[in-house]
Length: 330
Image (cartoon, rainbow, N blue to C red):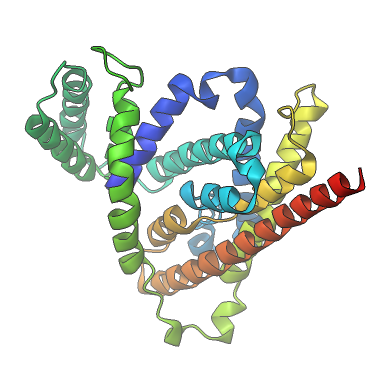
């Protein structure tokens, strides 16, 4: 997963330098919408499970959005996916990932020793300097990355965050007469490895749900139902309410973007396979009983993501067909 989060870090760095996140005016609505999409499902989960501290610890599980999958689906089912909607969804998903990374760092990381932090700081400073050389010394840079990963693990911080850290320290503007920035170049080279190797391997091990141990009791449990509702209903509801709040205070959606188009995008944001599997493991990993909750949570994430995908496709397809009928009538 560290490779996946490294690609996320590079993506964040590029977006902050040259993408939607570099323009506060354009980024405000999707940024606020992302916050709403995190807050509402988390609030639903915590409100219903607050009486049980063991279950309430999993309030982060229905919050994160997968970056690649919703954008791929949007591009496949809508010609609008290559324009304003894709940019809005990309910005929303990137901010959602920033929040998810922050939640992992704050909620599921516990500093055990200060000394590895100094090692980590030295590694990050070295990375910052070496990655800006005209000809980076890759064996040394790779070694520094591995040491940073181990230092973060030793410090009690989830080690996947080391990927985000070094990604954010990579230059996002061209230098030394390069055609593209190093963040964009490295992201392009690493993305296939992340998508074709890191994520499938992680999913193979993380999604090992023992279906034989899950029955009607688990499927009717608050863990399963609240995560399912959080992804399918809470996520799009939070996004739409936050976006509506932005327009109420004078902000506006991008030209060419309609509320019914935004509804389809908001529904796709209920797809959260990878990061949510990781959060389920982190949230319910402290006891034997909790491991059963983790399996139930993963199944809820899987089913909720599939339902969100299906509903998003149906909404976007219905909008597309409505546009065709309107064009034909005109």
